[in-house]
Every structure is written in structure tokens, then in C-alpha cells.
Image 1 (cartoon, one colour):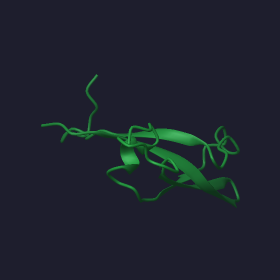
Image 2 (image 1 turned 45 degrees about the vertical axis):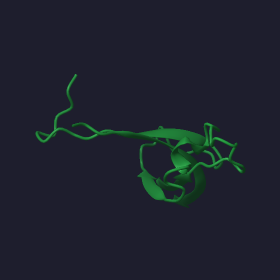
Image 3 (image 1 turned 60 degrees about the vertical axis):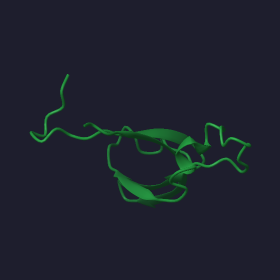
Image 4 (image 1 turned 135 degrees about the horizontal axis):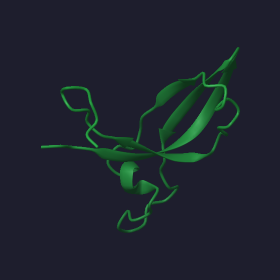
Length: 87
């Protein structure tokens, strides 16, 4: 059985280093839940309200392209045992 997850995250911090940026992301959550928790920002946070991940960006074309406060979707999809994505 395949499992996957889509998380909505916000970029909270950028650390600058020579030729590298370290980006820190956290799950997005609306400031208030509706009666049914239906706010799109809460679809992930309702079940996993905290977390953090960081990425080091060294691709020159991407340096300076990310801004704190921007939101992103991150899709987690299992990699097949052979390590190759299926088309």
C-alpha cells in the first residue's frame, strides 16, 4: 500500500553563508480554527501541528529567490525499493 502526504509549510528563517543559504521551514497553521477546522492552512497542521526542516540551497540560480513568510507545498511520496521513480 502506497502512502503519501502533502504538507503546507512557511519559510521562517534564512541563514546566509558564502554561496549557500540555509532555509528553515515550519508547518502552516491558521491563527484560528473554524468550527470544522476547514481552513486550508490547517489541513496539515490539524494533525501535525509542529515540526521543522531545513534545506541548504547551493544552486546559484536559486540563491536569493526565497523570502521569509512565503508558503510552499511539500509532497512526501515513497521512493520504490529500487530507488527509481515510476513514470
